[in-house]
Image (cartoon, rainbow, N blue to C red; front, side):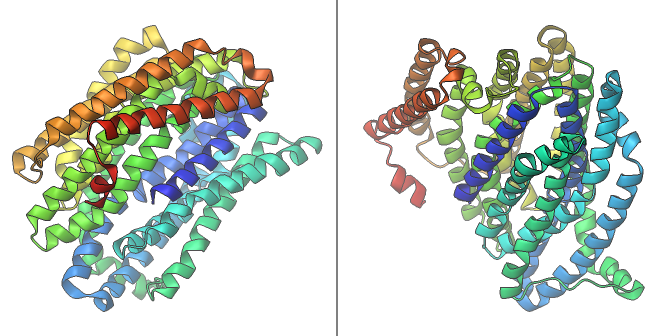
Length: 512
């Protein structure tokens, strides 16, 4: 799953690199990023967020207790209810696009063309939520049956579709007097369709392809199914929990839209780069752990439950701590190599670097949440993470009040990072207090080994960041990429070599 997630993030960075070099950071790129965030906000609320957190534990428990045949009826009912819901939501979203753009980023009205473009692109992309909601349903089914490859690989299709649109459709629109940036929403919609289409054969081979009810009687039956009602019951607090995170994103986007034009884009470019470690480590671990934690909980196997959490947290520390160090001391070279082409200026590099550094402060927390939260969801306790998230939302806005006046958009990123650290610490303490997580022996030695190796890696990256003229090498892209590959390869060898010298055997660790 990490491999395919890595492929997704690599193609995602290629997508962002192409957008950055073609369009730079301007009012129009801010408009696209805002327009894309609106369906993504609802997708995270109703699809990959609250729905998945409620659906996967119920499905895994039903499968463990009643078998595959009985679970197929649950899948059909949930799919019918979800499909009709997101179809109605998409229609409402297209009609309400102007109000949604204003609520997300009223500051875009500083540029009339930017606001109007955001409305048009929102209308193009809002139905994306319908595709992605059904993709989330399909992924939940496949992950519960321990088929992880197809759901992990599908995001690549979105990136490839947007890359194709930016590469071929954008110049065609420009040559015919249209807005070149309008090619991007077309790519998003094609990518959403492809992500759903590729999952259908996998579900059909397993005999789990949902049958959608079309008549009023079938829709009523789907909504009254006990499993559907249980998922709705669990979704209510989950919606609040995921909604808290999305409210935070909404507030940050609103604030950024009132700052210097380009601020939304700088934060977006930094966020895409930060998604490398958060997705490869956090999202992959969370997706793999949740159905198996739910199965262990249903079987009453508390030892296995605690051991899986312990293994996940050790992997978080092992791989995310060096990533956080890299984002703190090596951010400018990373941004330079990935984005510093075409319309992306030296100033854009510096502003994106500040945002990336702010995110880096909280990377360990952002990844750990993806492992700690399933420790609650698997036992169908969604209320506790929600209460924590609400308090952290308030705390994050306090950080915004203190930091944004001095650090502008970078203060928004730093606030999110600090809030994530508080959130992760709170979740961890809760699991320890209830006895769901019991640390296995050897944590002190393990932590010291990781800290020692990370300190060596940090020193090497700090030296490389200051010893080479990363911005000046813009005209020699091949040389700059070569230096980057050399530095990162040397850092990886130094880090894992130091771990090996201190006695940490990765093969034995991963076999756990």
